[in-house]
Image (cartoon, rainbow, N blue to C red; front, side, top):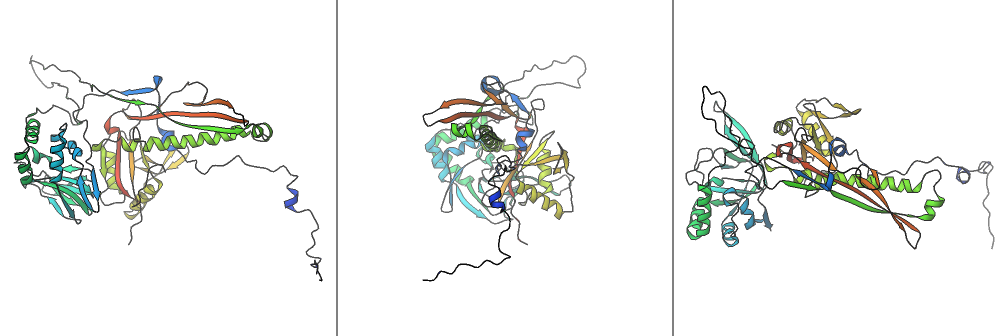
Length: 468
């Protein structure tokens, strides 16, 4: 057997040490460990953080008579929707009515209707003859202006209800015209069916009679117990006494936490600390991950997250899908001293496209040396923690900030044992039999909305590009 050796030409013969071999003896220049999951975290940077001694923050408010006003939830199976019986207690005339058997019978009498866009659900001035529960879709409430022109006075969306006055007053009329904006599924309880139900259910009849006879609480435009004040009078009229009533069961926010156990082998900590300290680098990246989780919870936590703690009266819906300047103006107008918008980057891009279509080019604002997009001078901060649904919709938040302005605040506690950064501590747990060093890293935080109108949400924001 003959073995042929490869013939190297003079041009292929290496005449110097290769870079691959040379770097074995070289001291390379290297970066610190990088982490793609680190974001700008504008929310945690802009929130005013309030010290919470004792771990609990109580929000004292004036007594509000509309506490408990919530969305109606449904069960949907195979395209057929039904209202969950106990959810009917969200309707003001049925609030506190806990007769489950009667509520179940009433829930069964709702009829499903599927409507196309542009359908008239109720017409101004006509007799109010049905209770409407919106399972899915968007509807516009259209009123009449001073000179007879049509004006859009609000939007209705999933979980909303309309026409509950039917339960109390058989002579009520529709105050506005309601039209569908998108394909809509709703559950309807007709007046005739309601009357039949009332005749056969004494408990329901008594509940509605009590609700109709209950004295109306005097309240201001925000739903708070009114304070009697006299002005513009002459002489010595008798002045009515007053007092400021407080909510007897104020909300308390307990600090939440995010934790992780960092493990480093002692051999790594002893031998591989040049030029970078391995424990410090491991700790730095762990803290970054905890801060990312903190911001995610500030937005999405079901207990204190901003998306779940916005008052229903402060939630509105986009008019046509994408976030338009009109939608942003309506969101901005719902509170005084709005300091920031918070939106997913895709929502910011969608808003930019809508502005471009109208020939509007909003000026950005300067925030700590960064050029941030803005609307009406209010910065729009990006936040990738705001979820985007599978059908391409998300939400935009608007906030007033700070305790002094009765706004949204962040909660933390500084000065905790073994504190490494404000409200974050690192505690040495020991070394186990495998020579692994353990550290417990804990971060404590929460958020509070001091008054309902401090936070508003624009829902059903379409961020997907629409086909031409």
